[in-house]
Length: 355
Image 1 (cartoon, rainbow, N blue to C red):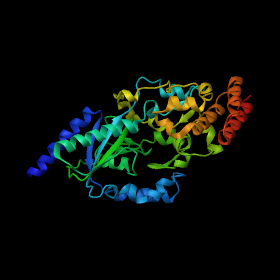
Image 2: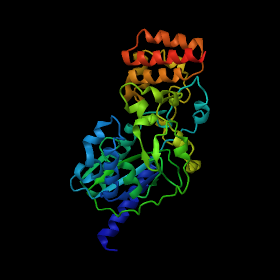
Image 3: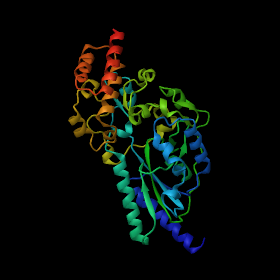
Image 4: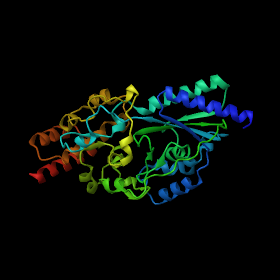
């Protein structure tokens, strides 16, 4: 091993140690080439499986070519941070409770974008102080990158049949982030896949959005429908949404590898505002001011009050018939936007049909 290579290996070891001190569970390094993943992405886009996420089409191959985001980039430092909220009410119990709203486990605490970006930026600054100025760019869902493919190549886990990253020692309940850099750090070997013949995630999807192993139709995915979609949720898919008001975790909840999931250690990922099992009848009564006050600082804040209300209306339409539910829906309807009103009317009709 030559002296420059030895120095870079030592630097990488120090970087991994510091990353752990900053709250990251694992750090890996990979190159910037993603030719096979780029072809997979282009086929997915061509099939229209991205739905109305037009930015995906607009970015095109930029997402699979990190060197276009940071000229001279030769490596990607990939990290993961655990978010499983061990203290939250059991996810399965919430899904089985029609009076409660289910919020994806990643959104129960503060917005992970800010937490991870701050930690990654600090890691990069400290590295610059140690070695001098170098080229880098921090990414936490803030730039078009194929983060799961990069994390796989950096040895952090493999992409499962549900298209989420899975680690043998930690399951899949973690966030990913990257530092694109011009530092030629030693690369890690990519992770091997260990899904085998298991198809539990495909069978568990409430809307059959996993149309084949490693192939997701976002237009049917509940996370897309409740978060990314800015219009009306297709009527045929509404009953399958159940009480999921922000995202969906079903494919992860059934994954056998999540028996190894690690609880979040960062205090910002603790449950806030009782979102692990909120009462739907209370949520539908929130004013826009209440939404702003309680959801500011949360990942949920990004979807806004209108989509939040739309999702809650659908969940109440899927709840058992209840005069109190119908009264809450009617009261909210008086101040609702046309989009929310349409979903409330659907919910009221569903309530009436069940009587």
